[in-house]
Amino acid sequence: MAGHSHSANIAVRKGKQDAARAKLFSKLSRYIMIAAKNGGGDPDTNLRLRYAIDKARAVSMPKDNIERAVKKGTGDLEGENYEEITYEGYGPGGVAVLVETLTEKRTRTNGDVRLIFDKAGGNMGTPGCVGYLFERKGLFLIDAKKFPDEDAVMTAALEAEADDFNRVGDTYEVTCDPAKFPAVQAGLQTAGIVAAEAEVRNLAKTLVDVDVETGKKVVRLIDALEENDDVQNVYTNANITAEMADV
Image (cartoon, rainbow, N blue to C red; front, side, top):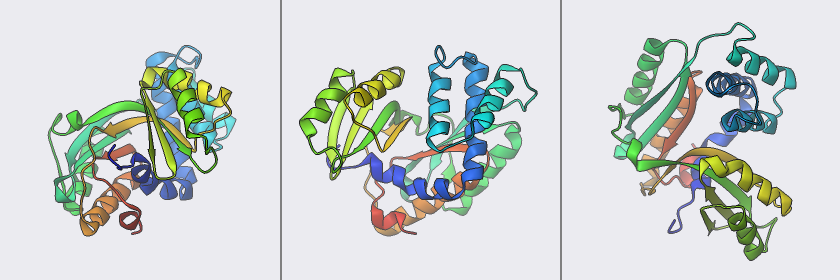
């Protein structure tokens, strides 16, 4: 990664998600619903649903909320009919931005996302314009201070069939094929290693350096997008530093 850290980019949105717990629960419910709808309601056979439920449990989402979302997805309970739409565009400085949404009204979401891009000094592009700059990966971020034996962490990760292991500052970054996410997670846990962050996401193939002012504008764009109820995840290839994130 040449010193670039995906963990810094993830930290940009972390505080806001924690502060807006009710909105986060609503977004996770949609995620569980669409996973159950597309792959069935059994997390043992539907890895995407298993991951969605694990993610909900990690932020202490109530069990009843999770079960209700699964039943809505499978049709056992009446619920909205959500569809997945990914938007691609350019942020300040021309950086790539990928926006994943779940919506029951495409026209509303199209307009909202386009307006947010415009107001932030970016522009929404056409499908495929930046998607090739990202790849879907399982990502584990591990605090090196809590697990100082780097060789042991790397060995556990690679034995669990992780693709790559890097240390950036005080963080180990482990990546894997999305299908192997549960296996890598289990392998780390068996070795007594608990990740501070573990998720399947779109990672930029190469991070692009931007100046501090541009970086702050990109962070404001990400924040504005994530404030939208239909937006599930926002990804950028801008290399966001702690100074940029403090906006």
